[in-house]
Length: 191
Image (cartoon, rainbow, N blue to C red; front, side, top):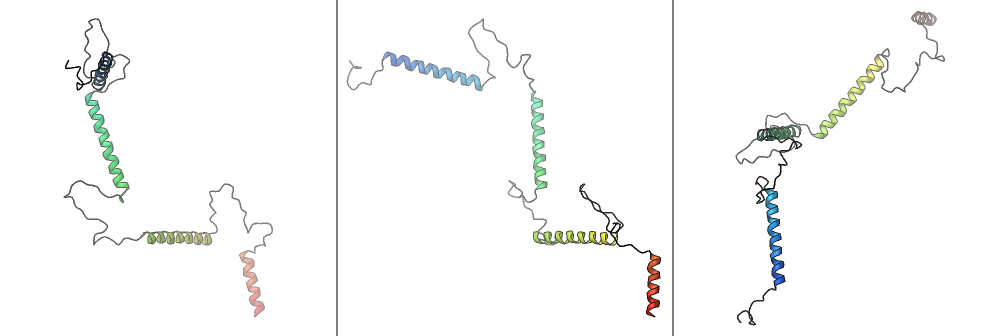
């Protein structure tokens, strides 16, 4: 017989053929499930006239679906927000370079132009701020020295002090008249 010869292809048994057909049927069922899952817009086809169901998305307890116009408006608003965010980043971070896809775009740096005022370095700016802080501290010291009538202002609630001149052990202060009289006596004594 042609099928029983030694060079004939090996024949599968009945059990192997049934198993192979079962595996192929499972693969076809999985493919149909994947198509049903990936394409919910396709309707369900059934041959059972008594089968009935209701739409999951149209039920009363379903979350409200947005319309196509609302979805387009929402995407437009999100695009505007992204553009505003990019503009804010560009404004707040001038150290970041400008990225463009236009090969013909060109510009020159505002700060490197010939007519630009000379820029100070970071060290010069730090030194200038240090000098200004020292000048402000010296001004405050001069005001404190020249105006002893001004009170000391502090933000520390636990700070306390007493007047050096009003203390009990302070030497007695002489009046202006007494000081003038003493100077006249000393001038007379010297003469």
